[in-house]
Image (tube, rainbow, N blue to C red; front, top):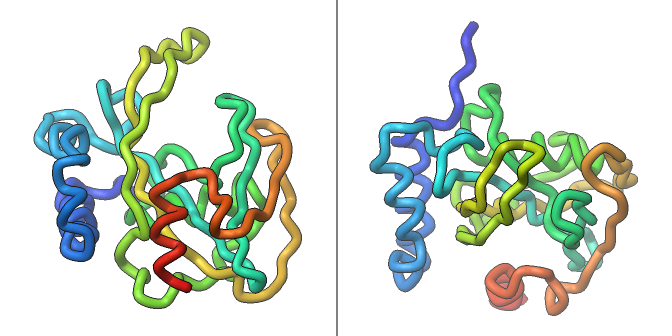
Length: 186
């Protein structure tokens, strides 16, 4: 069986479902709409100037959000990254990245109620050039999926790409847009 990455139609449908909740964000997603209109796969890490990535906003029982120290950027961010051909849906990529980077399997989490098929946030941000990967400066359009940790599960870091983690209260989430949306859940 051949796996295909998330289709353009799937990405558009997810985007429109998000914008139905946050119509004021449409103008901030111009790079996403340009990538979707292009001929290159919008989920391919080789599509420039922008491509789609996915992150997992993982919330524990104390209402804290998992942040991972990514070696590439040196920043504490939600677990996440590029889509793979096996990720049929955007949410699948976020779950895979959570498992790869933090050792938390999909079976240990449940989608945040009301966000089963809609991301909590979509963010466009700049990524510096990476000559070692032959990548110019570009943008990630990050679909941020919200999950709750169903049962306590130890974080087991993948040492290749990450080097530490923190559980942060909603008010200290690294992303300002995620922070604002989490505050609305209180």
